[in-house]
Image 1 (cartoon, rainbow, N blue to C red):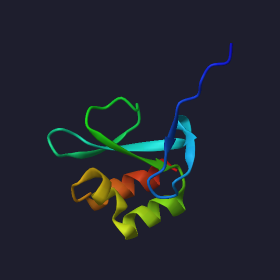
Image 2: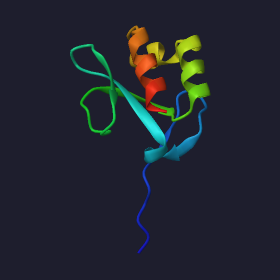
Image 3: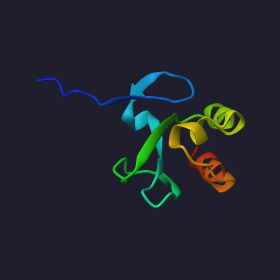
Amino acid sequence: MIKKVPCRTCVITREKLPKKELIRVVRTPEGEVIIDETGKANGRGAYLKKDLETFNKAEKSKALDRHLEVVVPAHVYEDLKKLI
């Protein structure tokens, strides 16, 4: 029996990738924006490909702001870049 690999779509590149190759950024019910390394945090999530270029595009285009419906603080982008 083959185990199904959960896939998600990157909000920047629109690529469907296995969940392990993506990073989830979450707006919690309290309105705080966090990087969800477990993939289980409560709140509205958006997936980003683990790639420096993708993070830079997300920062420039403000795509995360639109997907999470909140202004994403600059320190979140800095933390994302440290994860690579």
